[in-house]
Length: 226
Image (cartoon, rainbow, N blue to C red; front, side):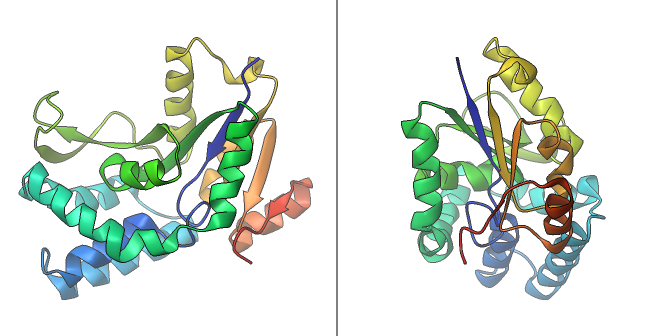
């Protein structure tokens, strides 16, 4: 029987926030107004950590730059982002964690609120095929179609992760409740709704609020980057 291993990405498999770092990268290379963008990026990042992020407002901010440039140009920048920022953040402990589940034959998937344009190459760096992320809308179904700056479907955030996961599993003729084991590794209290749904929730590098919740519920706490 299939067992499922779900991983949040930012501050879980990575010791940083890829969404935030992408915004900082765009500001550094002059793609966006640096002073304005860095200030807003900090505000949204703090709201996320505080558990009060307005996801629709944030996504309008985060996806707008994607709509203003060609896919070819965006890929060139993302390649540089991977080399300059992300590759140095890939930790062997996280790679080994994923590999243990892969070696056990588990179905492995990253499930993240960060959009798929930013995260897919990162997820591939971990050797993970499957990704459930917030999906930027495009002008057509062509693989290189331009981004519109809007979201396609439900943002993959909080309860949205559950909805999108159920759809993803249904496409594979699977149901979360009938799997023998389902693991979810996350650092964030924002992921409490999905942590409550799996059979094996693991608070991973948890923020203060999730750490307290995990201790209260006797959930395992994993420190990957200690």
